[in-house]
Every structure is written in structure tokens, then in C-alpha cells.
Length: 113
Image 1: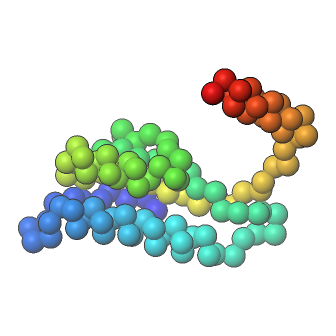
Image 2: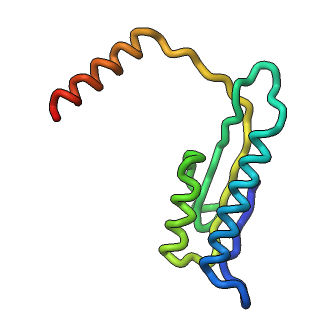
């Protein structure tokens, strides 16, 4: 999905337009996640970009989409650009040493509290 969402309409109020865009994005993500994965993939990953227009769009994580749309609402943008590209991905196994290092960091931060 590569789309510029218009946030101005003669009869639909601004908050309803924001709600509709969030709903459209949610439905698109659900539809993409339900597609059949290739054999080598474990999950659908999403490459996302967001900005006032296509030229100003920056990469974001898929979990930040609603937050960014709310930001656009707070700034009262008249439009914004959102790009979501689904790509099959494979989880990588974490090394045991990485997990141990993470556990030690968590223990140290808990002791500081």
C-alpha cells in the first residue's frame, strides 16, 4: 500500500476521517497477514514509511503507525503519506550468549531500582 490519505472533506468531520484511515490501515495489515506464506518464511514483515508527503516520508516500525497518524491529527495535517510493503521474513535464532548477556543487563537494571 502506497497511499496519500486526504484529511479534508466537505461533510465528514476531521476526527471521523482519522478514524477511517486507522481502520483502513488495520484492515490492510490483517488482510496481508492472512495471505499464504512461502515455505521458507515464518511471518510477514512490513517495511513502512510515513510523512506529510512521499518526499518527506521516513521509515517507521509497523507498531508506530497509529501513533504517527495520531501525531498527524494533533498537528492538523490536511494529508499524509503512508507506505506499507509486506515481505515474507524468517525469524533468526538468538545465541545463548546473547540471551545470557541480556539477562545480566536486566538483573543489573533491577538492582539499581
